[in-house]
Image 1: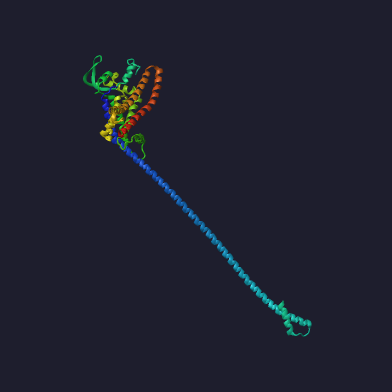
Image 2: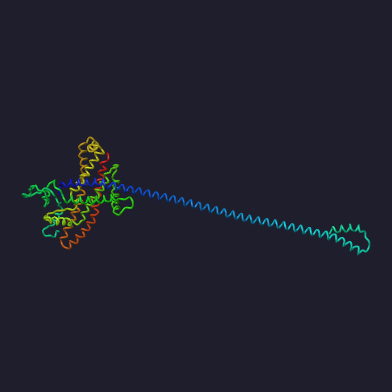
Length: 156
Length: 299
């Protein structure tokens, strides 16, 4: 417990250790630590950026999918409309055609009927005249009666 | 051990508290009067060591502290040489943990701007003082016994070979470190404040120009108290802790009953001492940083 030259020896040893630490120990380790800190910070920033980009890409992809779906829907509804139109058109044309055929047929029938009527009318007059002549057995003014009969026939 | 009949408890304790001192051999010519012999050698008694005066050296303190300091520097230097900025190895991790702890502490306490010295200084102090204090946890008899038996091989009387393995229980070691810290305080005071600024601070504060002598006395005492308290606090704590270990060790010789109590006590005190040695190393470091920070402050 005596104070002696150890005091000075210790001070010198301490100073040497400090100097060594200051020159050869602290700076390289500190530099490495700082570099690593920077590296980690950069890595984290890059990861954050990547995540952000991925989010954007996902959003973009969803948008594209959404657009495609909409387009598909449009196409489908257009096709349906077109199909309906075609069906309607063909229905209409079929109806018109049918009607046309019907009218033609009706006209023909009417024509036939008229022709038959006319024929019938002529025959009826003649038959009636012959019948009347036979029934009456007397001469009749052909002309006057024909007029009368014709009037009768036209009223049939 | 204390059970050897030739050693009393008191001489056992004294033996453990004596450093291995190398200096000019002294001889007791009459009771109380010592004469130098002109030969260099190790002191064989405490009285002779005391008579060697200032120009003697405590070889055990120097040896242990330098071994520990070199081990510390070798460890950190080997880490510094192979350090990578990628994934650290476990050893590198351990060193980095210590260094980051020191760096955080220094950043928290030191406000004097950029200074390349303070952080390495704090690292050196913390680890070195911790290692020196750690020697306290080695059972008190192991190393001294080994050294004494080793010295006996060279013809020395093993009962008169002293060896104190805890350098921080030697006031020379702690005061030597405090002296360096004091030197740094003075250096930065003069460098930052200028000679006039620093002397003015000593002379004109805290009471102004009218009370110059009082200021001078107060400020000088304040200044000197810093290194003294720094060195003596560490010495006191370690000396007291070492003393308790020695006292516990004396109980081993007092029968099986007391011996087993001593075993428990030693384990308990050692566990508690882990806290003390770390804390004292930390306090020495923080106070050094604070003192050097104060040397940077303008009042």
